[in-house]
Amino acid sequence: MKKVAVFPGSFDPFTIGHEGIVRRGLSVFDEIIVSVGANPLKKNYYSLDTRKAMISKVFKNEPRVKIDHYEGLTVDYCKRHGAKYILRGLRTAADFEFERAIAQVNKALESEIESVFLLTVPEHAHINSTIIRDIIRSGGDASRFLPDSIDIKYYRGEET
Image (cartoon, rainbow, N blue to C red; front, side, top):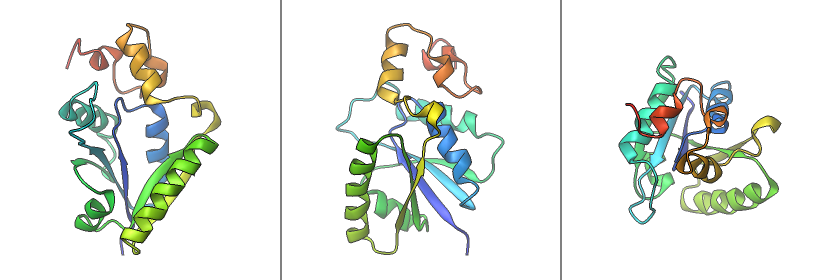
C-alpha cells in the first residue's frame, strides 16, 4: 500500500524550511501532497493561486509531490485523498507543544491518521513565514530564505 502524507499549511510564503521538510519526507513517504489551507478568515499576503503556483515551481521535477488546497479539517482532507499521515516540521519546543496538541485532536477525530514530525535542520530553524513575509513586504532581500527555483521578484509580484 502506498504511503501518502499530507503536508498542510498556509505557506505564505513557502520557504526553504518547508522545502527541506518535503524533500526529507520523500525518504519516508511514497507521495506527499503539499496542501495549502484556504482559510477565508485568515488574511494572506499571497493569493491561494499564487501560493500553489510558487510551490508547484519548486517541485516541478518531483512527480511524488502533488500540490493542492483545501478548506475545513485536515483529517477530512486526508480521508478524501487516502492519506494516512500528516507531515509537520518542528523548529522549536514551542512548535512541538502547538503541533502535539493539534496531533492529539486530529487523532481523536480520526484514529487511522498519524501525525509524523520531522525536525527542521539547524540552519533552517530560525526561518518563519511571518518574518520572511515582513522582509518581502518591507522591500528587503529574502531570497536566501526562499527556494532557489523561485526568483524573489516572483514573490514580490514583479513577474509571474
